[in-house]
Amino acid sequence: MKYFLLIVRWFVGILFIFSGLIKANDPLGLSYKMQEFFEVWGWHGLHDYTLSLAIVLNVFEIVAGIAVIIGWQMRLVNWLLLLLILAFTFLTAYALFSGKIKTCGCFGDCIPLTSAQSFIKDLVLLCLILVLFYYQKKMDSHFPSLLAICFLTIGLLGSAIFQGYTLKHLPIVDCLPFKKENNILQQMQTPAGAIPDSFALHFVYQKNGKQISFDQAHFPDDFDSTYIYVDRKDELVKPGNGLKAAITDFSLRTLLDTDTTAALFESQKYVLILAKDFDHYNDWKNSIADILVVAKIHKLSVLLVTADVKSAVEKISNLTILKCDATVLKTAARVTPTIFFMQKATIVEKYSYADASSAMNFIKHWN
Image 1 (cartoon, rainbow, N blue to C red):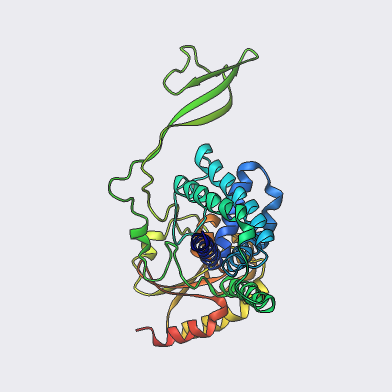
Image 2 (cartoon, rainbow, N blue to C red):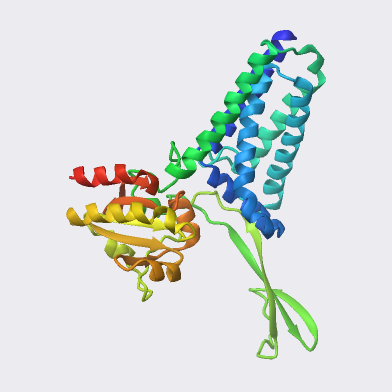
């Protein structure tokens, strides 16, 4: 039993540390996933707090994993882990059985799990944590109290600092479809054998004070302008196989609303500055100005891509401005702004504005 409990502790601890680290590599990704859940539940007021919640959750997972392995305060830690895994199991169950959330983001974008896989994983973890909970009196710390606290402090500070770094300098490991060396056009192609979800459309209309519901195949014979539209509901009839393009809805449009994506992807070399918004413009405007100076010397075309066109027009006068969907920019540029060095449709290199010196050095040596 002693060795069995030791194996369980190490397995649970390593899994929590791994889960926390992989999400700490991209805390904004977890923040966006939280917003997805909150939107489904109508909790829009919590959107401003999701990043802070994501950072705290990642730190807790890592610290709790360390605590389980070293056996520190097992009664307290087991209670916390039990509450956490119950919450995770509820979320993955909701994603699986409601169908409203495709993935739970348990391991971030680096290891995408289906809702079913995430739910099974959490059930297994729940069983293992219940074992630890039941036998907690038989588990003692292998380290002196002071040394154990040192390990936990290192884990806490290290995970917090690591997240602060990735939020400013881009994720260390880029698992997103807009990563370095990816060709955007190729990422936009639908995989062979992809089967989309099939939906039945149900319409609700009102006539003579009564609501009438029917699907797209059974419109009333007397349907005319006297029917007043009320609502439309999409019912999933047959789920697809989950295969879809890694990048969807990507387009770059001019201020006159002309789609220039294809034309731009024919350019040999150019630079895209992706800025979803201008909320912290004063923090990065000087860095971008320095990059523009070097780019001009080396005769590189630089374009600004944003979802906040109004602010861009007000603040930027020396760059061509292109429009792009805000949701796309959330994925493409985890830091605002992110600099893409492009060769046709391929992302040759990418930098955060905080690494402007590296970006300028890259321009000087870009053959």
